[in-house]
Image 1 (tube, one colour):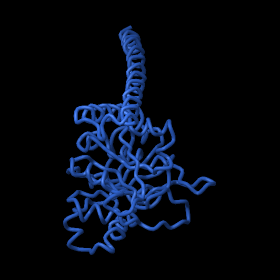
Image 2 (cartoon, helix red, strand yellow; image 1 turned 180 degrees about the horizontal axis):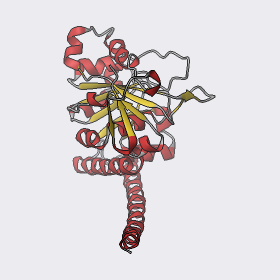
Image 3 (tube, helix red, strand yellow; image 1 turned 180 degrees about the vertical axis):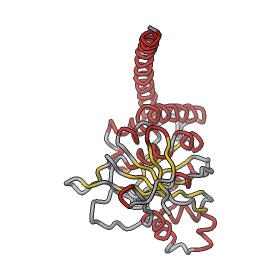
Image 4 (tube, helix red, strand yellow; image 1 turned 30 degrees about the vertical axis):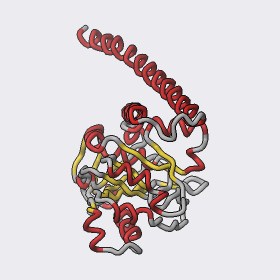
Length: 288
């Protein structure tokens, strides 16, 4: 009887909770869309060349709320739903400004890495910003959704300082930034040149750089990675100040990405025992 009573109470409390969450997310997206449209109209009428400080601050709060909501309902459970293994978890040490660099072969890459970090590290590094390609950002639905979860447009301009002005601004304001130095999704067998933007950020801003590698279980017919059953491996944190002393500007971007490409993981097939086990049957491996 007691067991039945508990189950019925859980159902009684859980169902309204889901309804309230759905209503909250729907209301937030609708309200943000209206605010975004009003901003566009304001700019088109040239009422002001830039947004007012209060309006920008208010939009930033809405973006952070949207990002946290998106994390709790989508990103956080992703590693369990997709059966993602995590290696080198002990290397995740959050200190702001915080920059994650990773390889890029799937549209889920940034979500997988943020999910693999765990909720504690995500909260310590919150809020997050991540660039998205201009061609994708300009799609109407993607544009609004990107604004809501903290993605911003990045495009090549006349110089690195112009192209990365917004990224550098976020880092200077103590935001955590997720960055793909290859600049695009790379298909299986392809080799993409590492962009010099990573070196520019490293030379112009002190930051704690965390290398992460997504190792896919297989590849689709189009050459992009299959995320189900993949592994996320974290490397040791790199201080940008130390990297500047060690490498010159012409090679630092490639040297930093080498710390991503060299990451490996161990599994049960190798015969090496697991380092430790965490909740939900999730195993963590040592990447040394």
